[in-house]
Image 1: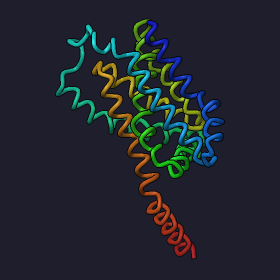
Image 2: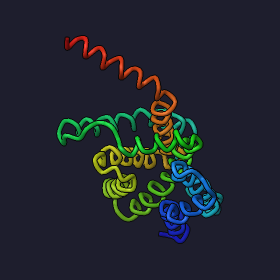
Image 3: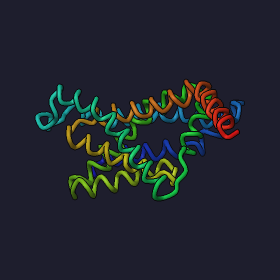
Image 4: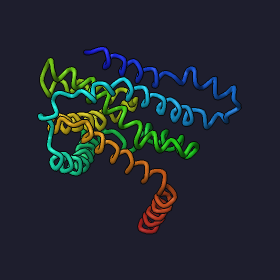
Length: 235
């Protein structure tokens, strides 16, 4: 692993751990406690993405493998096709969890993020855009890319996907996160363009956030209506 990638990993780890310092700072500024986690995520990820972009900028300017990458039409096609592919992988993984592993539907990690977003609406930008970009750089470009050069696709994709799943700390749904990571790795290898898994990842996260946050009231009303229907049907 080259030095740039090492600094990218260090920066990402510092972002994840920075709440230890950021929390007390925001408390000292009299920020309401319920807003602190969401607000610090906005601050840390915003700073982190700028730093990582600056670290990788020389490499992006001096790429030598441009001819190996997918053409622009192919990139657009795989970017569009990649979205339903990732959703399908998640649905299959979730079905396996429920049918064979007895895992209840619903994600505690997603619920927590939704609650934080309701407190700090700007967090939706981090969850939908900044987070996916950083994660694709870290898990696909750096971790998967480095392993892929030394092993093969399956090993590199499995290891990077498992790390991707563990970082999300939602261990009951580790198969769903791993399936998503594996599929994004496939899109990266297929096109050799990081923008393709980034677009798919952004689309998935944005869709979930729109459904869970923007249409939250409508979903709750629908759930109540379904409950009422069940009560009527049940007598």
